[in-house]
Image 1 (spheres, one colour):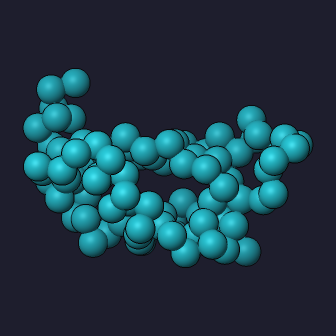
Image 2 (cartoon, rainbow, N blue to C red):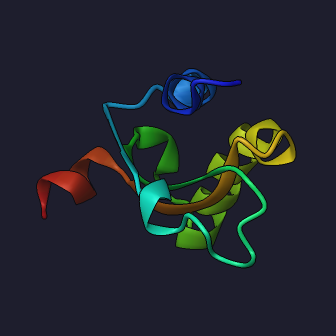
Length: 91
């Protein structure tokens, strides 16, 4: 079985993130009828690789890097907040 959080960190390294926060919400979804395995996660990633990308383009970029974890059913669902450094500092 895959240790999911380190696997997520590893796959996102190519974005040279300044920060990654992963929260596991899997316990909130156990027993749900459509949960066929895999965890439920919330991701905050700060990277200047997102500069000039739309919200959708940023999410696609992250999903593409995590694609194999979805295919392996290590991840069932993930909520992504992808920000540039300047956007993060403005929070």
